[in-house]
Structures are given as structure tokens and as C-alpha cells.
Length: 618
Image 1 (cartoon, rainbow, N blue to C red):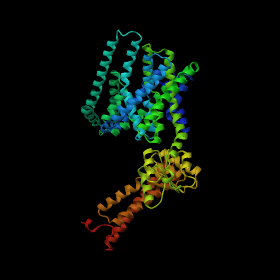
Image 2 (image 1 turned 60 degrees about the vertical axis):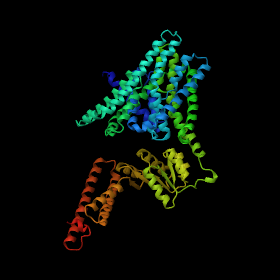
Image 3 (image 1 turned 180 degrees about the vertical axis):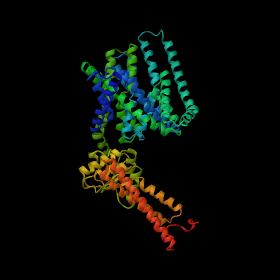
Image 4 (image 1 turned 120 degrees about the vertical axis):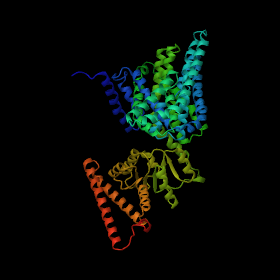
């Protein structure tokens, strides 16, 4: 039997490693990013050697970062981006120059040549946009103060890419004489001019041509061509920016911003989302494969010293910045950890510095290993912050004796978004106090000011539920948006707090059935009652009396709930589920037909026309 061809073997190895490592990492609460990195290390040249050319894969996988930045841009309308101009150029510049300054001071103190130290410091000052935004999305923190601050700093770093790259050959000239320095300066100015022209071209083209072009393609009514056009758009902007030496991700981001207010925004997100997730995972695998473990055995002191200097210098400045930027205290660990790591752009800087003769191949390997280790450490540091630091910060924010928090309450509300707020406000208006668990630091601080008992964090954590008083409470309201989190909370409650009466929000029928399978009985589907109220209004507009419309809506609701209850034991049998749904629909139609006949008969006998308003008969 012949071996699988190379084009088939490589995807098998990469996908197989990801499918095994990522769920295990998520199960261990280490995050998917660390799972991808571990998978890359295992299949890379340093361990199993199943993949021998990680650099090629990294080039392809970088498209995942480009797609991610395009989708981030789609979420930022131009006016919101304009509102972020000060954080981007103010705080972003402070982070880049401040971190580079601290690292350079340390390098000069160790006696390193200043041209080499300047270039390496700027490379190390960069952070990983891919890891930062992936973690923010995974934790649903993109719209928090910390999330917006991380995005602002990341955008400035992308903008600063071309000056940093242009600086490398200039610094290399310092050790070789200054004869060609004017030519290098001229080349740098020409590169800067090309970059400005490329950005203007994307902005003007996006304003004048993108929407008409997408409209023309959409009118072809060929979904796969629209998807191809979306990919072509991202690739074109990335290629244009790459040709002038700028970050490809920056070009894709600008294209996304220009389309953020278009009518095609949601369709673009839907079409490109799967590509982004898969390629981004491939990017992290490639970073893991690029980690040379032999450097750790040959130069462990140098690599670990570089890692410590990187995290400590950047972490110190970022901690100070978090206070100056007035980021909520409970969000500061995420801000610091996500930006203290190194970045994938550093790999490019170090490679260019080696080619220019500023550093040796051994030094390049040590720097790459330190940055890769910082990326691998990020999920672990976030986990430690969740377990050790955040509970202490939350305790430190408790009110003083003069503003003591209320006593533990009999009601816990997990999630205080739109759904949870309505439940909480109803309870509060009727004199019942509840304890709230939420991951939005600003909402937590705001609620505390009004005397609520609030805990910041992920309600799927058993220790947080215990701290919030689940053992003493009587009722747990599960109001979180995410279905997986809702099921995890319900499972924890059933296993560790069986005395709790659980009242749960269901996003859809499948979620309802999954909650019922866990033994939850008090479940409300979030759109059912709103839709029935609209249906009642329509029936009244069509001429039915309010009482009749209310009765019909109530009967429909009762029948619908009964139908779902009949489906609970059948939810793992697709054929039985379909048969039960058809039977229930026929029963409802028969019930309504019988009621219509009864109403018609009563009308003919003159017993009254209670179901139809007089003015609707004519």
C-alpha cells in the first residue's frame, strides 16, 4: 500500500494534532491558543518531526491573522475608529516607545551595541495581535475598556511596522560606515510615501468602488462567488500593503472599517468567519512548530533571561499605563498580560536583523524562542490571574464599613445582560435583592454603587459560585448569552448545589432540550413570549377581541410547551423527534379548527360574536 501524498499528509497531521490538542486544552481550561501551540510543538521538527518546514506553513497561516483583522474592522464603524484616534496614537505610542526604551536601557547596561539594542528593543516591544484578539474573542471581552485599549495599542503597532523595518538597514550602516546613509534615508522616505499612497488608495477605493462592486456581485445571486469576492478583497488589500512594506493585517483592517456601515457587513462576516478560525488556528500551530527546543537546552540561561526581561519590563510599564488610562481594576490583568507578550512581527524584525549582520544566527534563535515562549505563557498567565489575582482584586473593591455590602441573598443571577437586567429589575422593584455574577467590570462597578452584591468573573467557575453564596442561596437564575456557558453552569449547579432551584434562559429549542436533559424544569425561551405578544397584537388588528386573542396565544403557548416536553425523551432520536413535531402540529391545527367551528356555530345561533369586533365584520 503506497504512502499518502505530501499534499494529503500535511493536512492530516495538522488537523489531527489540532483536533486532539485543542479540546484537551479547553477541557483543562488552558484556552484554545495554548492548545494550538502545544499541537505545533508536538508535530514540529523539535519533537515528532512530522512537519519539517514550519516557515512555509507560517506564511500561509498568516492569512488567518489578516482575516481576523478584517473582521475586527467590520465591527468598527469609521466614526468609532475616529473616536479611538487618541488612544491609538497616544497610548499606543507610549506603549511602543516606553517598552522599547526600558528594554534598550537594560541592553545598554549589559554592554550591547546601541544599534543592535535599538532594533531588538523595538521588535520585542511589539505584541501578538493574533493571540490578543483571539483571547478577547474567546472571553467575550472585545467591547470592554481593556479590550478596546488592547485593540488601540495593536493598531499603532501595525502602523509602526514600516518605520521599524526601515530602521534595521539604517542601524546596520552604523557599524559599516555612513557612506550610503543618505541613500538609505532616501529609500526610507520613498517607502513612507508609498505607504501613505497605498493607505489613501484603500480609503478612496473603499469609498468609491467597493460598495458598487459588491452590489453588482450580489446581484448575480451566486453565494459562492460572493464568498470568493470577499476573499479576493481581503487578499488584494493585504497584497497592496505588503508591497509597500506595511502590515498586511493593517490593510485588511482598513478595508473592514470602510465596509462596517455597508449593507453587506453581516454577510461578509458569515462568509469569512470559518476561514478566519481555521487559518488562525493554523497560524498558532506554525508558531509552535517554529519553537526550536534545542535552543532551550543549549542556551537556557539566555532564553529565560530574555523571556523574563521581556515580560517584566513590558508588564511594569503596562501596569502603570492601565492606571493612567483608568481601565477598571478587574480588567487590568487581561490588558497587561495580553500586551506583555512578544509578537509575531518580532520574528520578521529578528530575521531582517540577522540578514543585515546586526545579530548572529544563534542570537536570532534565542530571541525567537523567547518570544514563542512568551506566547505560550500568555494563556497560563491568564489562568493564574483568574484563579489567584482576580479574586483578591474583587475583595479589595468591596465597600467600606460605612458602605457595607448587603448580606448574602437567596437569589443568584448569572449574567446581567439584557435578559438578566429585566429579571433583576423586577426583583429589585418588588423588594427582593439578588447577587449578580458578570464578567463586565464596568457593569460590576456600576451595580456596586447602587448597593448590589456583585462578583466579577466567569460563572462557570465553581470557586466563584461558592464565593458568591451558592451554598446558601435558594434560586439560581442562568441568564448568560452563551449556550455552552449556560449548560456548564447548569451542570455545576446540579452536581455541587442540588438544593438550588434553577431558573434558566433558553436561546432556542435545542438549548431548551439540553437544559431539560440536565434536569432543569423552569426554563423560558427568550423569544417565545415576545413573539406571542406580537401575534396577539396582529390578531387584534385583524378584528379579534383582546380576550379572544389572549386566549389563542395562551393556548398556543401551552401546546408548544407540552410539545417540547414530549420531545425531551426523544432528543437523541432524530426520526422520533420529526414524527412528534408533525403530530403536535396536526393536533394544534385540529384544536384551532374545532374552536373556529364552535365560534361560527355560536355566531349563527345568535349567541354572541365575542370573538370578532363589530367593526371587523364589515
